[in-house]
Length: 306
Image 1 (cartoon, rainbow, N blue to C red):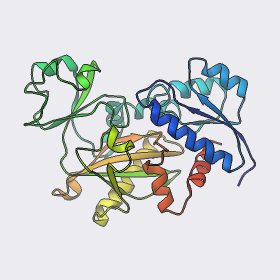
Image 2: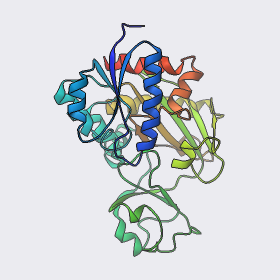
Image 3: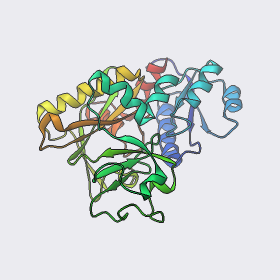
Image 4: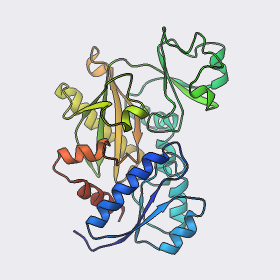
């Protein structure tokens, strides 16, 4: 191991993913301390710059999820302060958290992603923007926050009713995409290496926020029981997306695969530049399957930042 460092772990904040970030940050801090590093835990408030300046760490471990920790805002602040930090930089973060910008960058490079378009939420009350079934999701949230699947027999109404519960009640604009039937796959990348393919099998519904962070609600199958060509495509696409977006440290690419369509049915949904590091999170789990302890995984991310 390299010499002990003073590492500030930045967590919490005020996004919809605050609670997940607090768990990620606590796990990361404990792992770093177990490796002999000095750790300063910072639950991010509006005084975050002053607290970081006072701490004067060697490096910041960015354990934030969602905005503003994952959208370039915190990255820009850390750049201005001259602080080294984990995960992706400003430009990458701005693009990757925005699902539409990600498509504009990756699709022309041959990365298969679903079609779709940005719609005004209020327009949904007049009619469907694309044929059902389709998915509605916020343009720049993670962890499946605010995702709705609108089906022919869905309970949102036809058209969607103004009083019905859904992301249209919380966000002015949404991304509408065709719903891809089939299976949920994910691949984490660490540095320049893809860590394999996991299939996610929710016990009910789809892999939403609750399914991700509630123990027992989703089965993780690693390695995924898929044809070699699909596994190879997932790891290849995840590495391409990591490189094209300019990701650093670790990222995780999420896929949907319609297994009735073979390779033609595989689509990249999004690239997460700051994957969760909770006990149920997929990136450290894939690393563990590759013989890397949680602490080793955290250490590798820190080393990439330096």
